[in-house]
Image 1 (spheres, rainbow, N blue to C red):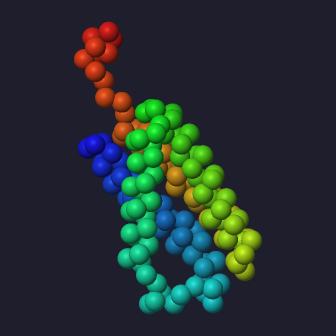
Image 2 (cartoon, rainbow, N blue to C red):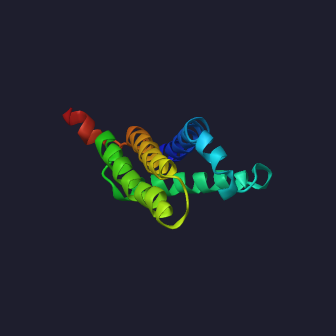
Length: 139
């Protein structure tokens, strides 16, 4: 369980850093050019965004911890597939119903895939199968 908690913290921190890079540094100018679509900065609920990120990290790690055989490779594959599934709906699903520029749809899609791939690598690296004494003796 300690590894799962550590993985949640690592994924959450990784996502915060990547969110800054993706949404501030890369997509920031596009958000500025479409500011009529967003809440004014003073009205943004950043506490809610951080809570959403934390809860997402908890569920991301929990799914891996409970359902997926533990290995770096499986974590990486999980992260990629999770990112493709959620990135398509976030980027292109939103693009289909809101007047956002295509560059935002693409950025949200690719950004989601990058973030979940990194998260999958982190969880696969941190949460590994515990070796039993018998397995250690046979090695």
